[in-house]
Image (cartoon, rainbow, N blue to C red):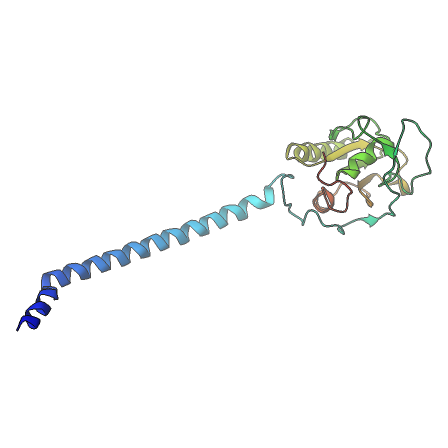
Length: 218
């Protein structure tokens, strides 16, 4: 008799059973609501990222075209080392124009500042920039090319503002009479005219690439 009384005390009353059932249903509805809100939020974030990514400026870690790949676009040029020389010291000839490696000035003469240069920057200065993982962008327009220079200036300014190591300058007498040449350590890309996609691909592949001797230096 005492055992049956104990069991009856442990049983829920009908009202308690209904209350517990309502509590479970409420918890399930809340869980489903939170899961739905989370899924909607995730989709919204992915949508925003998909909209923003194509228009991101150059710069920051990562890159839109696989930045930091030792191979990448462009012609590979034989490495001529990275010996430091005194100002105006004689040295063997470079194996390309513009040069992509070889003899160059040490600090404080080089590297030169990143960004746009209106005057020719000699290889002995500029190679130190490439040694630090920088990108040289050079044009040779005897008859003038103001539109191309303006587009390159915009791209370089944006890139430098975003933390990229870019250098734009005129370079008379480039190989094969090219109008536009991109350089990185041991790499060169020759272009007949400005092509933003190709320029960005070269930058994103070679800027701060481990192919350069000091990719983390400024």
